[in-house]
Amino acid sequence: MNELITQDTEASAFELAQRQAKALQTSDLLPTQFKSNLGNILIALEYAKRLDMPPLSIMQSMYVIHGKPAFDAKFFIAQIVKRYGSISYEMTGTSDDAACTVWVVDPATGEKITGPEVTLKMAKSEGWYSKAGSKWPTMPDLMLRYRAAAFFARCYLPDLILGLQTIDEVRDITVDQQTGAVTEVKTRGIRGLKQRLTGGDNDPSS
Image 1 (spheres, rainbow, N blue to C red):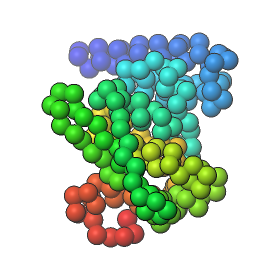
Image 2: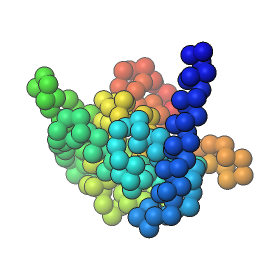
Image 3: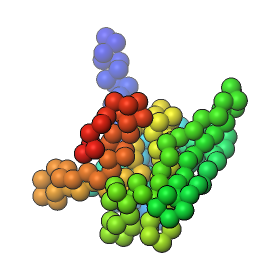
Image 4: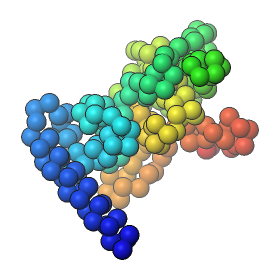
């Protein structure tokens, strides 16, 4: 009996989501990737529900790359501010040693929480700097901040980002356009981030 009630509830929720998506898909306010695309809108509505955010806010930050949802870095920054009330960037070094670290103060405990350091040398060795269309050569300071914020969010806000990646992170993945298979991943700093932080990964190819 409970299983039937659950199925009816899920069916009703899906029908409601479809009606909402159909009402939204013709709006001029929607970004291009959502206009007249019911499937993309339904995905955005699901994320909006999980993150307790307005659907339009989600759709203005979400992009579909290689068939996967990705968010701009400003979305991750907003999630950090939502949790901790503010975000701070510590910039150090010059040239290839230029680096950025994101840190916050936990309002509940007063503890300073510091994320992983991102350097320009890392951006070059990971292939982010030289990728076609990359903003790293022209806006290195901004890109350092964006990537440091994404790393921080991945470490300390897994419940808010739900495993999502930034646009740049998804673009670092090369996909076979015919099979959809991942053929190359250049973001070693993301794939092995947790292991390297805990000392559990010594493989430079990860």
